[in-house]
Image 1 (tube, one colour):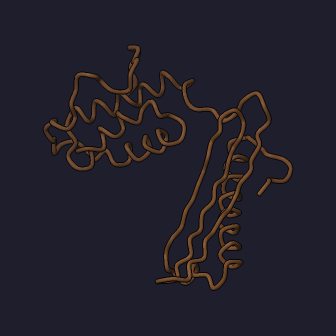
Image 2 (image 1 turned 135 degrees about the vertical axis):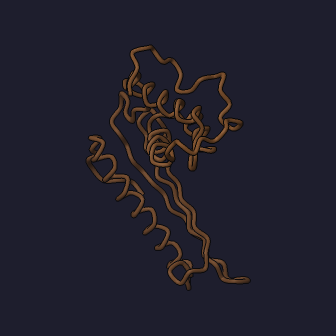
Length: 178
């Protein structure tokens, strides 16, 4: 249910959910906290603490305070739907990336892959990845093979990112520097 009372914070500052007593009459908050965590991680960091607190004890038999916090957070989001992180700025979006790899011949002969994708639009957002395992798909037999695998990983990240940007309405035209 929504409330008409103005909510300035997603969670009460006087409630400690870690010490709240479970109520077996209440349904699990897992679906709600999963959705809220998705929002918090992507565009609404202002609800991250409330979502994290709800997650402690909200999976099974959440307390009445957990339920009230969930409702308050949802009402906060409804009342403050204009808040959030926005990708964009005054300059056009510029995407560039790099990849690097090392070929280790000593010991277990593991290959290390690494790379980074940069979004440069006055935001300086960075997406990075690193891989160091011995699965058959990442063991390289030469420096060149290790470098190619690293570039392949960066390209996969770029494809995902471009699809995400297009979905968000932030089309990027032109080649991407790698």
